[in-house]
Image (cartoon, rainbow, N blue to C red):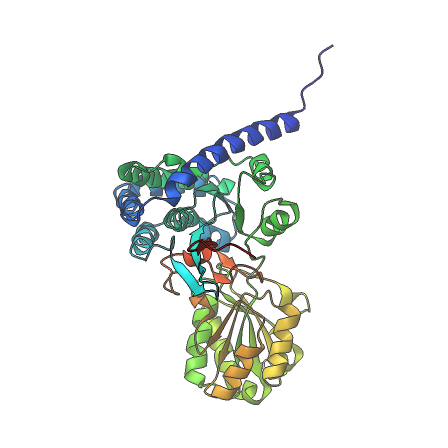
Length: 428
């Protein structure tokens, strides 16, 4: 009697075979791409940008299919998934900005001469094959393709099921650019479907994929961190704080907080918690709340904040550890810089924190005391972005302690090797 096939086993085997084929093609392309001169890579990006513009209607139609196929999304999720002409143009500009940046590959990072005359150079080189797993934001595929291509690393993209058609339309434009520049199309590949088994195959592909970068919600990132046999570069959450110090300029605080929270609530650099000094809270907190309430924000506040504004909803301890990605702001009253830092250490995710103050000593105390990847002084947390840092675009935000931290652009997507130049030296 023939055994009954297990559909899950079959799906895993099919996904593993597809991933291995893609990864082997990427490894073959890696040798070519690592040696590609800057003008070739830049032409591929420029041609891909032109294709994004010329195929805008196709991309928007594909995005409309994705949106129609996912009617039950939250407002924040729908915002991340939605494309419009301005966002397509931003993707195209992002590719052009990456093309305009110096080539990171082959840079001499340091050099020194030993007493025996050996010249040692640390030289930037591509990481290798990158696996990018992301969820609902279609533009992530374009950004990842641009950065990996310029950094000399082929990339295998696996987008979320909600963005399947959008991702395919964007990838077609990237492929146009690769062909125009004479680069292997295997430099940028997309998963053949949204089967979760393909993600599992990527995570098990040690020796075929050199680095996994997840970009999405906590569930995705946690799964990748727990299951991957490939090194991971990631951040789990964006629990960002804006701390209004007692020496803050009130008008500046109002402007920055409104932007940090409400410019785009669904991005990881959005402020989730307002910390405000007790000395400033009575006068300033009502203004801050009124500003944000007018923009559609809701609040979760501690007892000290509710003593000033009793109508605010009470915050639980869990609220302060929640990445809302929505128009909801936690509020806590603190007693100075150390109190603010203590709150961040208890509840933060080491992403981005900001202090608003005219007191330089307090600002330096705050910045020096942070363990987070990014600290800001008198600026919106939403500036935590590769484009805003001058990286052209970013492949993600890294909050770990190894290799890279903060926005990951071209330089952060390179590793290094050593060149040792001698004149006949032998070791005694």
